[in-house]
Length: 114
Length: 210
Image 1 (tube, rainbow over the protein chains, first blue to last red):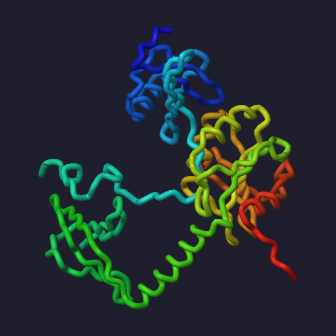
Image 2: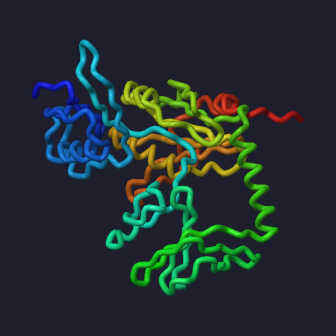
Image 3: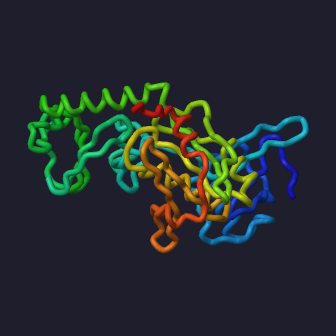
């Protein structure tokens, strides 16, 4: 595995009953969306030691947990299933719209008018 | 105004339709009780029209909303009622009680600790029950079913997901043919689930006297 810089982290992925680390580190401050995309590409292509390749891998309902480095352990990122229950807010938003953007910002709504 | 529909976007109430742009201040009728939605901002693109609207409820609708809000707020603020989860093994025996900080009568928050329990016991895991602390049908929420599916994908196995209300229990499993969660007749369960009375008590259920 590649060495890890102070600004990087190793991603640990749990999928289909198995668990493994991505060989290449990623920026510790990468967005959750980027982490899920990179992880999905890696699992799909069979790039995670210990995990079976799965072209149908889907991390949509997964959560990214980040743990800062200690003296003994470098930065770690864990990608694991979410676990909430109950009635969370779930507004109906049309396909292609970005939830929770301020309505006053019309650039996202009608981009060519921005 | 073809295809008129209303929905929430963040904290805003939105009306969308295909057709003419109407002036700000116009009241869009809704239902047959006199309720209207007043257009306060409006944008269009081709035939698509999107308007930020504010409701003007009829007195009857206002009263009904007040009753519903009072009921829900009283329920959510009731510290005596709380959602609780229970992890059980493939024999139906309780492995772990999940009563995290931040849970209330309407939800249990995401928890890495719960995931760690599921992962640790994955070989003998039977499922996770959780309460909806009221009397009524044990239907899961969308949050429930997406959590169930994510956990099953992570664990690589299907589980039993009981939803326990104060007077019913629904036993839900993933149907790989339909791709949806469906209730199972308890007579066909191969396990006897322990802890149903206890999870109700932990959720605040008090047995009514004779």
